[in-house]
Image (tube, rainbow, N blue to C red; front, side, top):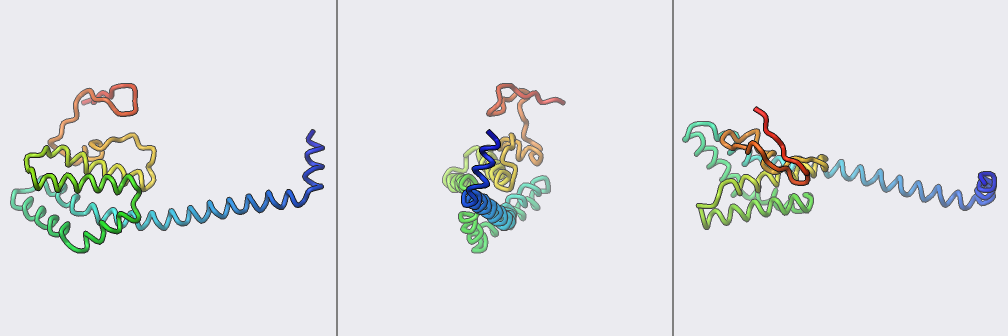
Length: 179
């Protein structure tokens, strides 16, 4: 059987050439795709950092005095309202993944709704920000992460209490928070 297969392959050099050309084409496409992903990844990272900077500013200075909080919030708000930030948001729609763009849009829809109704739950906004961070994390290479949106923010929220028993989506068991 192997001898007849070998005889067929050696007699049909055109067939071998076609297989080699097909393999070369696939390898070239994979190499080009990897190079493109590396280039886009660097641009994505830079854009994501710039988009998230105002949120990082607000969340990291939340533990300071009321005056410091107000100043940092004013600076972040001024940056968000700037033309440069709008250009970054526009750039995000082109280089971000679909899920990242949707998470960014949901975050902004929450802010617009907050302008109309200031009584909205702050946890919803934090979940929206966590969704954005989670999608950025997936976009930059951690596609199989099992974190959820609030786990992305839990390290910086001193007043947020995770329940002792809580269910992780996609798993069939409850996770126990140890002391």
